[in-house]
Figure (spheres, rainbow, N blue to C red):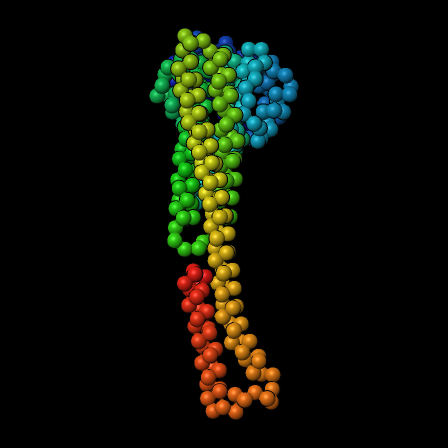
Length: 321
């Protein structure tokens, strides 16, 4: 699906439904630009834009491919950038990812989105409330979108930290509940989040290196780089804490298994004593004087009970029961 907007210092306005983008530059006011949004596009939709931008044909293939890693490239006066989008599902505590590809030159910004997470409405609202970014042209609009996506990184990182804290409390709470599956599941989500965020550190540094300190866009990029680093640090902390919790929990499970084995062994020993005595007296010996005693039967039962009691007491004292 393709929608586009006319953007300038006065604001953002929807573009005409049918337009030849080759004629758009002449219709833009000074400092204005066109912003084209594509969602899950096909090759035909991208081809006409790539022709206008005079980009290599392989850009079409790259832009329509989902699940790409973040990267930054330049083709003449056109900058290409891929940024991962992330969003958090409250119901399942899952982290989902998509990506947005940016293609921009002086007068045209193309954003190609894959995935359900849509940062564009919030980015447009940010631009409407911050005319300085709009006056920076396509770069300002692109950085507004990336900034919105990085804000989502921070929100997702907070949700992940909350999940890790709750799972940590559950693991170390009284009682025996195995949380290994939950821990591994959350580790997968954290890994997916970290793989989306971590490469953005390099991209933010490259963007900073492309802009002079006096460039009006530099403060926005510097803030962006700082927030990306915060999100990356949060992902690393969550991953390290989860690893520590998992190791501690595996140690807990091993300890529980040892306790169970001690209990099983203790009860086996307690049961073995009367079983052995009963086995001896069940051999049908004739020459056993105590067989003819009046008190022999209750005496043997009492002996079994005393031995079992002494064994139980000993195991209890040593913490086996």
